[in-house]
Image (cartoon, rainbow, N blue to C red; front, side, top):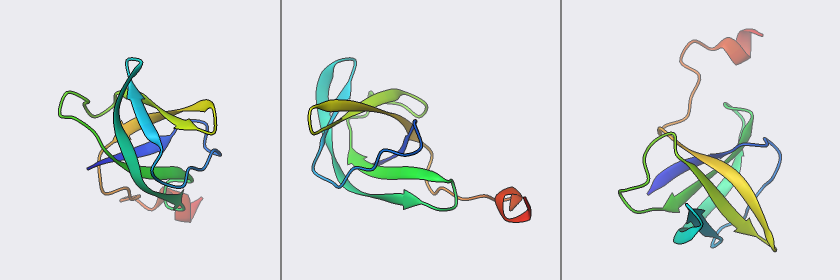
Amino acid sequence: LRCLTVDDGRSLVLGKEPVFYKDQAVGYVTSAAYGYTVAKPIAYAYLPAEVSLGDSVEIAYFGRRIQATVTADPLYDPTMTRLRG
């Protein structure tokens, strides 16, 4: 189970969407929501081991592909820079 952040910062997915890596369907989204601590949508997806941290993937959503990045989990702001402005 890998954490993904949506690159455009505004496209939300719901879950069960296929995930593509190098134009191949390699997994699917299990859950998704808006990540308030990182100010962008996040998703969790089952992906194979060959997909590494920092890799770009695409989430298929109603006929379009949404760019996302495989991100280290957990997502948080350790220095509280967002809170402090």
